[in-house]
Length: 258
Image (cartoon, rainbow, N blue to C red; front, side, top):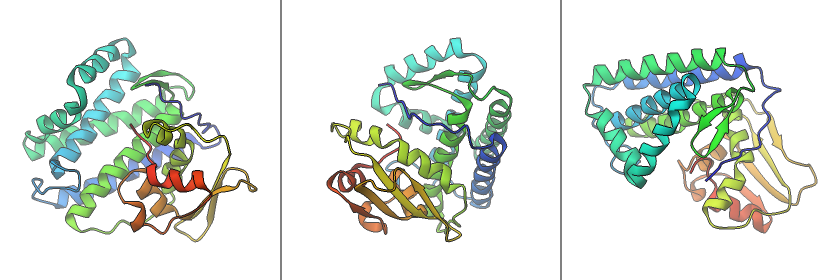
């Protein structure tokens, strides 16, 4: 399936988004470095803390292949396709089997290289990804989102409460523009009506997307919206409210990734 987020991030300075990506990785690093037992099970069934970090490290390695040697990315796609639905589980398990110190160092090195590569590549230069062609302008928030989401699994496991930051805005933006993916995966047609999303940011500010007069509306905290669209919380455990049948359905099926 081709995924087209239709997202224009030209107004967001690259350094701002990249600094958010780096900060997200550093904050998670501080948590996992202080946790001696990476065998603890996380909310993702069958995945330990080590699985979560291994998954992030593997994804970073794929980003580097896509940017540096795009002609070789076809082999990555073939491997994923051949592995079927269990590929991610097996890949994470293989990484989790590494000694903790080696896995931590691999993840650190990989995310440092990814940040450098995304800083150097022209913003509108395209490279292959799963189901689509991406640009650095889109890959940066996607990596931030994935780091944040898997980091949430780790934080839930070790009992650390996340401090919301302005970085949530990048994730919420992906959530808004990715609603078409939500309906596609659910086997439903994309609603024709526009949507309006109004979220309370961590500093009390209001972030908005969509026309002000849209009848399909979602409101709530930015944190709960991000937890919902990354499928880290069921709708009932958020403060989100929806007006309109399509908006109600969207919150039920919301997701950012396949």
